[in-house]
Image (cartoon, rainbow, N blue to C red; front, side, top):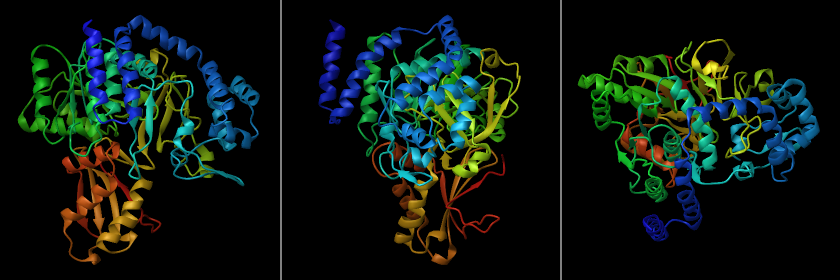
Length: 545
């Protein structure tokens, strides 16, 4: 009876929340199904069996997904690419049978079956030979998955790309997260989360709540109820909280803790350590660094604390700051469109080295074929394996590159079957600071059109420089040519942040986070040029790496 009353109380509240009907439908489905998922706790035996099964049937899963979601799906852009290359399903089946998934993907890449990140997001038309066609992200949605959690990618030219996640996919990812955390000795750690609000945070809380103890705290870098944010941020947190209470697996409500004042998190970590518990914080890499810098300044000892860091590279400088407090950190490589891609190696050769989760994804590098695709040789192309994945990916670049190796590291993750390593993971098409990401193509509009129109000058008079301080903290410098004369620097920075964070969704969150954390500094000097004399819109300068 109590659950019945709670259910209709939630329904009444949401119906009067002002949310669009589509958001209400997704929220209702989420509220009804989440308790069942949380009640079905993942055991160690189940996690290991699931991983063995997925690794053992990779090729079968890939072919089934390709047949149903691509070859038999008339709206799939990959079907069009395969037809242009002369490849039918029988040919794909033969390629996989002869050389495996990765060999088949290399062959498809050479035949033009791939997408750049701009093509995938519909920002540029797909051009292959004499054929040109346009796509939009809706056509890449997985027809086999259901939609329960809505996440929005960044994007300064609209509301970003909605990523509608199946709770079953969150459970698929939770299996790997559980195994990776257990390998670190973290099955009994007290878990907390510190990022921005939204579907991504909710998905991670559910993921970490699917095994062991539920997360104890949810620290939010931006207040979900902040003016200007879409009401879905506030209501999604409430719905998750209500549904988890019904399942008696309580997930925490958000607590606003800004990046520049992490003391409440330090207090929680101190209290946990004093009670002989191990606090584990999931956070952006730069946020973990800021927290540890504050700990060092206040003389707070974090000996024994653990971090899992995402969103930005875990560089040597950043890891050094974290370790100076007595804490340890492991990286996790993830992309919003496909969630977790790699879990941190426990015997790494580089600070950001991860084991590729090739039970969830197939991955190749562009190699020499990258010259034809406009990708660096080390550019990464991802393909989906799980029928629960939110998007179907087939040789899709998300703008990242890395060093890919297969080596015997001897760590527990290798023994689980994850034998491929990635490290020195960097973006070649994205700007990332504080864990928040924009495509460099989004930055161009602001630097070329909006700032010159308001403050004068030409597009080449403005440049954004992304760099890392000696302590590992991120910095963005907005270079403005001195020839433009005196100007109000605070007004220019405000104009930049306002232009790149329009809307009320993920892009608004990023603008607020960058403003509050004071990531952007203005510098009056001529934009930097490359060795070939080019003035790039986004200049990457990371001497400390």
